[in-house]
Length: 311
Ligand code: CP
Image (cartoon, rainbow, N blue to C red; front, side, top):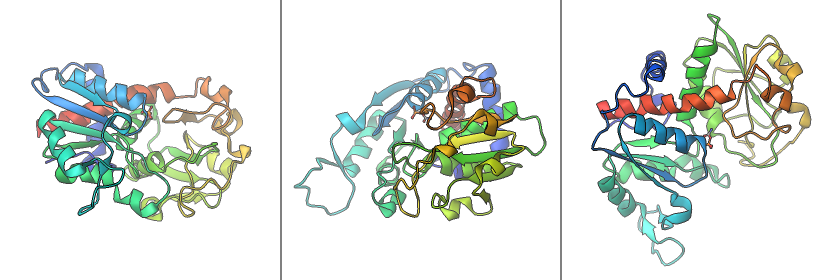
């Protein structure tokens, strides 16, 4: 059974991007592919883009859509085997996943990192629990360690906007008042490993991402130097990975400004905190691609669902 759990599930990024761009020209081209089938979107965390774009993509393919805010409206799930469930959890993932599989032909899940315990987060208990016990394909709508639908949308946006054989692409950390997960940055890095690009990651010391994911990428601790001659600058906050889930620094000097962006195109997955992560002048300027990125979330989801329906 084909799942879409990480960027590693993309067998050919170029072909998927090409197919997604083709779908964008005619989104209803396969409007009967999902007829008589249902997708369940289970949200353990908030969302705007992922929820609406995945729903839109499913509707474009003729799927029926069930959406549940599982985190606030579902029973608290137990994930461990053999637990005496006399505490806070009411239902085991074993039953929940099998039950939802009877109502849905595809299950898509959003379940963020808790950022308290690295091992627990990396075990991906929600995503992997559903994968283990469900009898239908699973789609990752952002898990503890990855956001592969966002990365695929970003790849589509890069392909649409790029004019060079080997563009310079910078992933820059930026300050944020809250501790945020690593998922978007991780998947962006994984996706960039599949691209022919001069790829540079910049962040303050202490904000190194998982070295297994960044292996082979250039890391530059001087943000201004990293941004020189960039064609694309992708900005994102994440909390420390080594000092897991901690905010080590809120240095406003790392806020993205028009001076640092220069002639590059600016990218961010949204939602974004204005004048903390990035200056108004960048977001409101003609170098910002954030609305195009959000639009491409639909076609990223649609190509993933299409491939699952066609298997
Ligand atoms: N970029 C993104 O995943 O947006 P939402 O959190 O609003 O879904």
